[in-house]
Length: 135
Image (cartoon, rainbow, N blue to C red; front, side, top):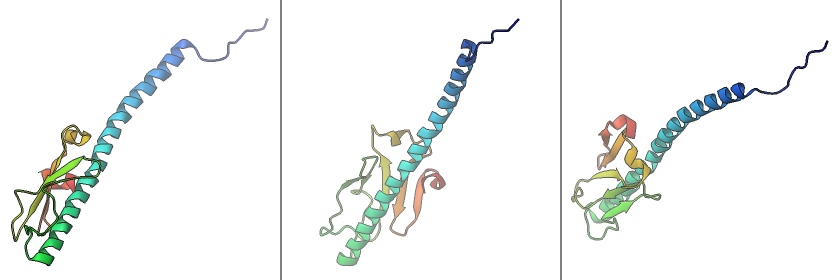
């Protein structure tokens, strides 16, 4: 007598594999989203550094950060519009504090680790809720 063995997967084995892949995918997707948001912070840091460099150039040429001859716009946005800086309130002739905030409707609004980033004329870097997460 010969035994007849079937080859292939049973439905139960296939369902177990699908369940495991689903669980691993859901875990990986959560980490992926957090990493994308964290990597987009570099755009906010770059925007702060570029705006600060423009203000430093203005001060060296005209003697004041808030000179009318400077070409620093009132509202500065990052390349992908993840962050914006409102420069109207925190710039005087001798000091500035720049604050980059996430743009409403962009994924950076969901960044709970870094809701805003700051940079001053003395090079002090800050962030909310913690500086370490932002810079």
